[in-house]
Length: 384
Ligand SMILES: Cc1ncc(COP(=O)(O)O)c(C=O)c1O
Image (cartoon, rainbow, N blue to C red; front, side, top):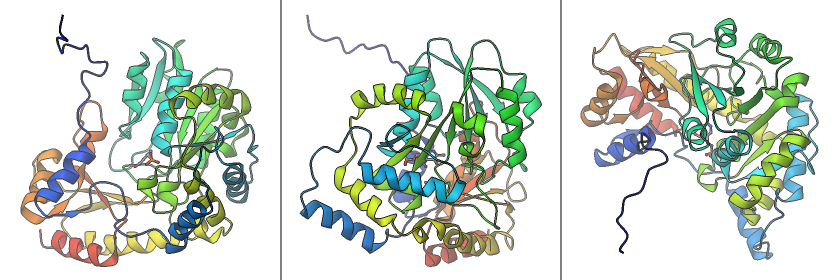
């Protein structure tokens, strides 16, 4: 018998991500790509030189399963420096192939069939497939434009006997909002006396504006004890293509995480880990990131505020959302298509971050771009 080709998809409703679609469209129409979240500038030359250095020294074989010890120590030091919290590099820190893998493995390690996971929308698109493939169920809470705040009393109503996890993301993609210490305290109170885990996506941990603090789940004792914190060096070091990230969790959770990690990945690129570890000897590399991106945010905003778009304040991440209802009544999906084809600027429709494609006529721009790119895009947007 020959192979029929019929396979039952485990993710039948999953489509190509909007990031791939918009980046492809931007390339096709030679548009300025402010859609996908990656810098159009290089990482520090000193960092890539360190990779070459460690490669030439022969650091080219498997790293230890949880990561190069030097890098785990540097992550521990960085977290202590910023948040004043201790994570044991030996037992509580694991280096992953980007935050995406950290998220997927956390979902695989902790979810059982029919468990419920609370997702706060608009939500980054890698949460849902990891939930579904593990036969768990998403339960949605929607934050709405223009404030994108969370009413925790409403979130509490979503908790059932089956709730296993809640996923939070701060600083938040796509809205650029931050959870406040009030949010974190309410979350902590809400989860007390439950066995609900927190998956805290903190990939933009070093990008907050106007002097605001990143309220990591690590900072709150009870939250820390139930949190799997995921982060990414891609965002911090302008190296999204390297796919190196890390996961923090108390020892009992890290043990379970590593049981899956050691067979899904085993270990992450050795010379990259050594290079990043050495680079982090200088805390200015991450402490200067907010100021670096704040200048870009302000530059791009100076155009948006003069345009017919209505920007929604970005308090963190390298994204800013803008309401275009003063320009068009088109759906956001159609609007970004026209913006790309007719005006040569690509953006992301925020409806793509909602399961029910909730359309509030808001689109997301990525401003992790050179000044020249931002000036060019800004002038185009002002002329619309
Ligand atoms: C909120 C959020 N989480 C996770 C990721 C994935 O990070 P990584 O590239 O390290 O896999 C991204 C990347 O854009 C993101 O925006």
